[in-house]
Amino acid sequence: MKILIITGKLAGKRVSEVAKKFNFVDVHIADISVAAFLTPNLIIKEIKELERKKNKKLNEIYDFILVTGLVRGNLDKVYNETGIRCYKSTRDVADLPLLLENIKNIELSPIEPADIKLNRLILEKLEKELLEVEKEKEQFKIGKIKIGDKFPMRVLGEIAHSIYLPKKDLEKKIIYYEESGADMIDLGMVSGENNKDKVKELIKFARDITDLPISIDTLNKYELKEAIGEADLILSVDMGNIDYLLNDLKDSDTAVVALPTNYNINYVPNTVEERVSKMEEFINYLLYNDVDKVIADLILEPINNEFKFIDSVIAYKLFKERNNIPTFFGVGNVSELFDADSHGVNGLLTAIAMEINANILFTPEASSKCKYSIRELKTASKMMFLAKKRKSLPKDIGYNLILYKDKRFIEECSFKSYHLPTIRAEENKSLKLDRGSFKIEIDRENKEIVAIYFERRKPKLIIRGKKAKEIYDTIIRLKLVESLEHSAYLGRELGKAEIALKIGKMYKQDFDLFYNDFWRDIK
Image 1 (tube, helix red, strand yellow):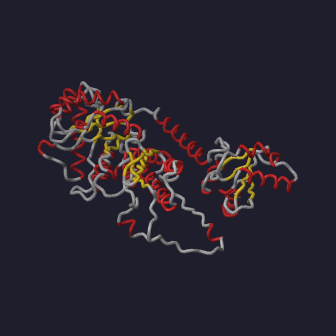
Image 2 (cartoon, rainbow, N blue to C red):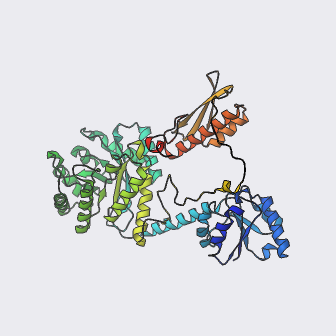
Image 3 (cartoon, rainbow, N blue to C red):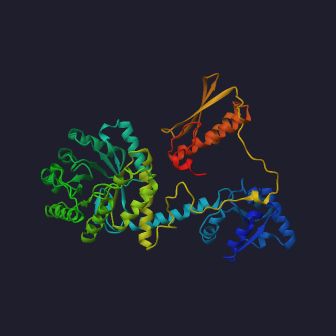
């Protein structure tokens, strides 16, 4: 295989450095500053000039040509006029080595950037690797889900106060959790209430929506009793309610999350050794009485709680070292009570869970700062499992939780090469009003941006779309703006709305997306 990469002057040095490591790659630096400015016609021109110099057709030397994935348009025109295939490479030079390493395994495209296909290929391979793991023998199953140390940690998503949710909202939440990657769905009951008459109906409703295993979360013994044989898992059973539930559990396939507590008398072990020994004592009692599907919950404590977070982690570690019993790790106990963005917290907690061999990660998405926690935990679980399997750091695995920053930060600074007059920017003191105005909002339910058009303060029209460009193209097409200032303003606000819709951030017109003290202090 022989490949030619055509690039621009600014990226030429970096591309050439990469190409040195691959003996099948040559680089041609086109007579253009920025590679992204190449067009099919300019590429054809460069090819013909090269062929004139070499006195030979390029398709006799190279299998194909690569250009940056930032080039616009369909590159089939290059092949039609020159006889050599031209494909889009990665959009970022930093991803080029990975592409060249996998060049024989990826189907390149004249339309789609290669990094999109490359990421897809990597994830497909990882998913196949994870599927192979599912052939291993389990300790036991919860519904159809295998539980044990040989498998990735399973994600159990709790729907808090599910009994009070309107059926339509509960259905949406279940579907959302499943789409987010939850392995099991937990129906949270209401503390201090007895809704035992509604338990079976609630479980049946959930089963009509999803094939995922269903659990019920309550300490109420009457609600738990109704769930035995109906739910795949019940949480939680402790020394305070076991006598009422034991006979039903013996004859059931329902798995049990066990606590080292007795909430009937408000007893919670307050030392590491006491917590572990009480857990062992209770589980041995359950196993002796033929309750075989048992998961230990040592109770992950919030940060800076009376019983320290780190002590609760040590209790998990000690228990798992002494017992071959699956464990339940209540991630939400920490993330929901910690004013930090959830993805980093969830990533670190999953890493801790991996090191202590936890088996189930449990969380709700109760607060807005913890939105997407199910998806974050699912990604982190895969990442940590593969790191553990490969005996590597959780880095360069293929999955990551780098959501709002960049793993590789390489920005082009072409402005440094231009010796041009420079004007210091400043805002206009006044804004020229247009004949109409827009109020921009977000429809979270339908995942759309909404632009309401007003004339003389009266609403006249609503424009909806998924992308900012769809909306401002429509506004321009309908000639609803005349002022350049207004057009620029709309582009800025619609762009902010699109980002807010995607990342789950609150959008408020005319306010910065990132407005708190942390960002205010960054110059």
